[in-house]
Image (cartoon, rainbow, N blue to C red; front, top):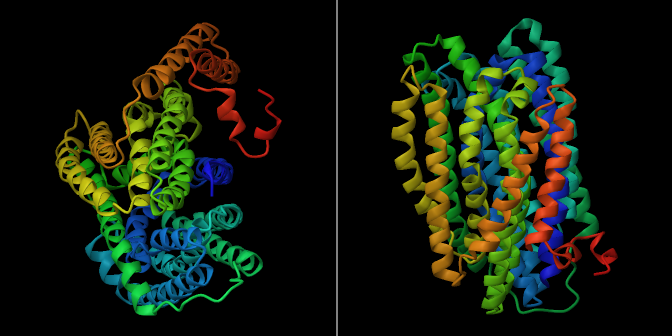
Length: 510
C-alpha cells in the first residue's frame, strides 16, 4: 500500500475524530453548565481506574493485531491475517469477561481504599460492564487498522459518541435532582450505552468487509501467533499501565494536595472536575489529528519496515512530525489567546490561567502521541514505555509539591504536566532520530509554522481593538486564514500536499 493510503487513513480518522470531538465538546459544555463540575469530578475520579482495567484486559493486543495483520497482508498471507485476528479476539473476549467480573466484586474495596471520595462506588459499578464491551470492540478496531481500512472504526466511533451524549446527558439530567453522585451515574450509563452501540456497528461492518483468503496457504500454529502477539503487546501493556497508573495517581493526589493548599473537599473535587472537563477537554481537542495520525502510522510504518523500505519509513516519519507541528501550532495559539472566553463557555472561568500554562507545552503532548505511533510501527514498543517511566518519575514530585502550595494550586499541577509532555516528546524524538536517521528539518518543522503563527497572533491583536463579543469569530476566521496564507507563501504547505488529501485531492489541478 502506498503513501496515499497512509494520508487517506489519517484523514478518515481525523474527520471522524473531529466530529466526535465537536460532539464531545458540546457534551462537556452541557455537563459543566447543566450538571456541574462536582458530578464530572466524581466521574473523572473513576475513569483512570476504569482505563487501567481496560489496559489489563486488552494487554496492548489491538496494536499488536494491527502490526501483525498489516505485515501478513503485505506478504499476501490473508489466511494468516484472519487467523491472527480470530485468536486475538478470543483472548480479548475471555480476558474482558474475567476482568469485568473481578472488578465488579472487588469494587467496594477499591472505592474505599483508592478513591478520596466514597461516593464513586456506584459509578464504578456501572462502568465495569463496559470493560467487557470495549475489549471486544478493540479487537475489531485493531483488525481494521491493520488492513488500513479506517472507515469501520470511524463509523463505530461516531455512533458510539452520539449514543453516549444522548443517553449520558439525559440520564444525568434526570438523576441530578438526587445529587451529584446520581448525576455522575447518569454519565457512566451514557458511556456504557455508547460502547455497546460502537461494538454493534463495528461487528456488522466486519461481517460485510472482512477479508476472505482466495488461495491455500501453509498453516500457522496458534502457539506461534500467541507468542508473537504477547511479545509485541507486552511493552504496550506496560506503557499503558504506567500511563493509566499515573492518571489514577493524579486522580487521588490532585484533590488531596488541593485540600492541603487550603480548599475544602468539595471545592477540590469541583476544581479537579473543571481541570478535566474544561482545561483538558480544550487541550485535547487538537489531538484529534495526532491520534488519527498515530493510528495510521503503526500499520503504515510496519508495512514499509517489513519490506525493508527504510527511506519510506524516514519520509513518513518526517511527514508525520511536520503535520503535527503544522496543525498543533495554531491550535495551541488559539487556546492560549482565547483561554478566558473558552473556559467561560464551560462555566469554568478560574481555569483560564491553567489552560494558558497547558497550552505553552501542549505541542509536546501532540508530538509524544505521533512519535509513539512511529516507534510502535518500527517495533520499538518498549521505548515509549521507558520514556514514560522517566517522564513520570520527574513529573509526579513536581505535581506533589507545587499543587499543595497555596500560591500555586492547579497552576503547579499544570506546570508538572507540561514538564512531563516535554520530557516524553524529547526522549521519543531522540529515539526516532537514532533508529530512522530522520533529520530535524528546522525550517519545515519550526520556522514555517512559527512564522505563520506569529502572523495569526498579530491579526488577533489588531482585531481585538473592537471589544464586541462577535469579534471573536472574526478573529478566528481571519487569523486562521492568515496562518494558511503565510504557510503557502513560505512553503510550509504546497499544492502537492493538498493533492494527497482524500476526496478533494484529485480536484487540485496544480
